[in-house]
Length: 158
Image (cartoon, rainbow, N blue to C red; front, top):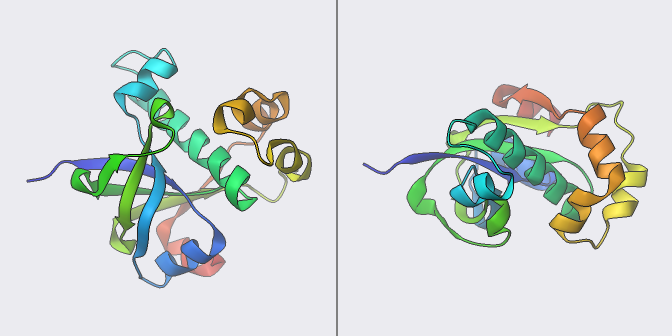
């Protein structure tokens, strides 16, 4: 039996609508996971699972902001065979062949109070590593956690 892996998938509004409608998003899709490389990049110990998963979620949110203009992350338990090497490997990045709606467990987004305009403008066109180092991104991460939502709420938002 294949191993199940938690992935954080940066998404756009259309992809969220597909999942809310019970449809599969065809890949390849950028995904982030608590990989050994992510542990090494962030100087985490093997027992730091929660911190590694949180880092993967923040990275996915930042990737979504850079590429989609908003922080929207779908979290899912996927078959490890659907993952292969991809972009952002040092940051836990992988390529996901598809994302089935039934695999999505929750989603994360900014609350209405997060002022993203300045950060969005600052990270436009940057690499993930360069954007991560931007002081406005660090402030965003410190002051505006992504809000957790049940997967059942996705259809109400999408």
